[in-house]
Length: 179
Image (cartoon, rainbow, N blue to C red; front, side, top):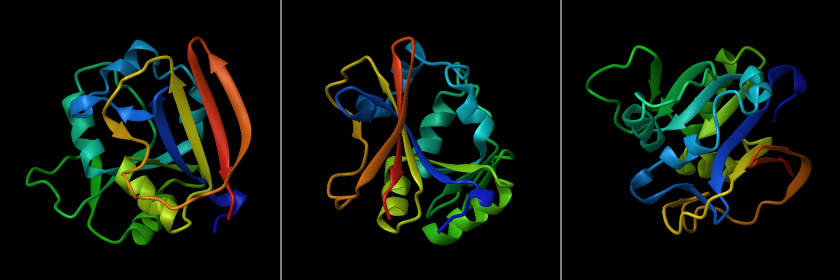
C-alpha cells in the first residue's frame, strides 16, 4: 500500500513483559519510570503525524501534567463522538479508518504515521494498512490491563523481525508486517 517516499504506517507500542500496553484503569505512569522522550529519539524524528484512538487520547489528556513530552507531529483522533470542547492541538476525525489513515499520512509530509491505541491499531492491522510494528518492551509485569489488541480483535498476522535495540532496561523490537 505504501512506498518509501510517503513514509510508513507504524503501530507504536510500549508494552510490559506480560503483554499489556496499559495497566489496570488504563494507567500509563509505569512507562515514565523507564522511558523518556529521548530514549529512542530517532523514532520521534521519523514521525510526521499520529493517529490516536479516543480512549488513548483521553488517557493522554489525564497525564498531560506528567512527563509526556513527545513531538510526533500533527495529532488526529479517530472517534465516533468528538468532544464538546475542541482541542486546538488535535484534529478529530469521524470517518472510517482507511480515510483517517489517508488524511493523517498526507499531513505527515513523507514521514511515518504512528498508530496509537489498541482498537485503532487492530482496525488498521485487519485492513492491511500497517507497514511496521514497533514495540518497546519494558522490564515490568503488570498482571492486568489493556492487551496489545482487543480480545478477538485480530486474526493471525505474520511479521518479519528486522531490528532490536536496547537502551537501559528498554528493548525496542521492530517488525515488518508481511502482506
